[in-house]
Picture 1 (cartoon, one colour):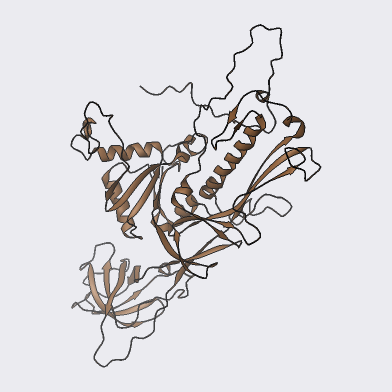
Picture 2 (cartoon, helix red, strand yellow; picture 1 turned 180 degrees about the vertical axis):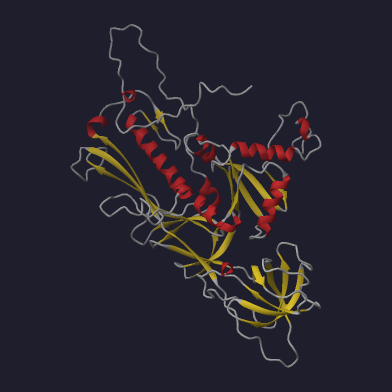
Length: 479
């Protein structure tokens, strides 16, 4: 048994660029004795149709006065290199290791220079596990830009090696003789800098003065509580609601224009944008953690997620925003941990008496960290991501894990470190211009009298960007 494919939910657009016949009374046949019996108020068959809520729940909004928003994030405190190689002979007491350039970030001040210094003690382990012993302790006796010379604490050093073997090396301390000179050289802390650019989001509603004189016959309402009997009020308020949703979805979905792309090639002769911005999904895919192949459906899958979070910021509390399918899978996984879960009789700490409705859902769980589950309407709405093909490999997004709390960053406007939510919006503003949410009316109708246009035009504008701090603590769940 399954849900029949037809009839299904309607997906035709609910708005058009011209007034439609449904906005006016069209039956003027007064000779017809069978006049329709009409309801005065339209029925809200799709419930609350708005989507905006995600960023309001997890973030904040704050002003910015620049075309470019920059922030610094801390790098790792300790030093570790991978894929290191050596050509040392078997049973040698000393060895020279080469540290490949893939370990270095060319944007940092150190460039392609390794940071291990003479006198430091290091842990060395073969990455393939084929050589014995798999781990060695050694002291650094000399260094160059991308090599270190070590003397092993263990006699005979590496007992077996091949040129193809790769090693992991990290510092665990240092050792010096009595009366020796100080440590050679020093290390400078390097921050990792990120940036984003705000984009301008616009919308407009227009109605002619003549059409405003046509009185509608159906009372209209919208999700923000607006109501009235003038049909154009509904269209204006729905434009506003649609704009509110786009303020959020643009911050979630935005991508930067790649060099050589069609957007980057747009010239100043066109009014549309040409740079893009880094939305939440883009940043997490680029700098965060990605789970593919469908949502994790068992504890083993979540254990691998927790293991990855251990290696990142280890944020104690996290919120998982999920679509309906992912939410049910989490509920079923948690219910299966109960000895009565298979029968569906005990999904929580209640007695299941005959007067109580059975609660088959969970709001969260703790396993290493606290995970709170929240349904995300944007991922369920069929006019947005809820209507996309969810086949394996399609890249459809099932959920997003967002760390709770805030982090400390350097704020350029304040000129000092400040606490900021991991996810927040920056909008353009100054003492004379606030572009967080601008709306104004032009024309000569509907109370406006600032132009010769025989119409009322309601304009909406915002200029904003989302800042995803510590993207390495986020998880995105994709098919």
